[in-house]
Structure formats: C-alpha cells, structure tokens
Image (tube, rainbow, N blue to C red):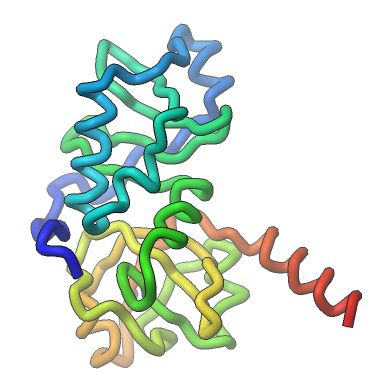
Length: 199
C-alpha cells in the first residue's frame, strides 16, 4: 500500500451528514468549479488518505464544489455527491459515488474489509460490521480510516469508519470493527434480482 496512507487518529469521532446539493443550494451555497489550487489539494488529500493515484480517480477535471464560508464542504460530479469535507480536519467522507470510484481505483485488498456472506445483506443495509463477521481485511487499515466494505466477490456493500486495525478485525471474535456510514444494498439487490431473472 502507498506510503501516503493515513496513519493518525482523528479527534472528531463522527462526521457531519452529507446533504444533497439541492439542499445546500437552497441554503445559499453556490455550485462552482474548483480552482486549480483547490483541485490539487483535494487530490493530494485523497492520495494521502486512500493511496497514490486515487486523487485523480476520485476528483476528475469535471468535478464541482459547494463552499461555505469560503471553504469546500462538498464535492459533486454530474450533480451527484462524491464526498463531504469535514470542517474540523479536512477529512474526506465518501458518499456512494465517491466510494464506487475509490473501489474501482484500488485493487483488493487495498482499503477493503471483507465480510461473510451471511452478514453481507445486513451491512449493505447500513448495519455495523462486527469483528466476528470479518473474513479478511487490508492489514494496513488503522482505526478512524474511511474504508470500503465488500463481500466475498468484492462487491461494494458499504463505506464506513474503522474502529480497529485490519489485523485486529481478523484476530478479534467480538466487538465492532467498522461503523458503517451508508450501505449500498439497494443497487446490489436489484442487480442480483436481474441476474437471477436472466438465468
């Protein structure tokens, strides 16, 4: 994994919820293109948190931003939220689209927590990941990192904040491993149903 991976604990335990762009605009924020310097900084932070090269994958040239008090609070692509930027420390909190882009940019096992097939449907609906359900995990994962939760076939189930290291998730048989921010079960379930219908 890249030497740029994040290695500190964040003091703020929970991140603010990501509001939809239309809600922010109603509150007076304006959707705009980031400056060259802002885009460079966004990409650098993404590389630092998730791994080298993720910045360009997560933030292509066509992204737009929403600002509050002159600081970027949300990043969107084609009017779809990618992530929010936590005000306290600049931490990137992935939305569904952002998680999908990071998942596509990184090969397994990078940034991944693999859960059992029994637990997968519950995690995909936003339930907490417990250590006893973790089948594999990136050994470089540290607490308070943003990670991707996947099933045994590497299908993206959710994104969330880790509470243990990757090694602890495998070693422990009890306790919470990942605090899921949002599950992506709806789309996976629809894909599964379509696949079965064509079988």
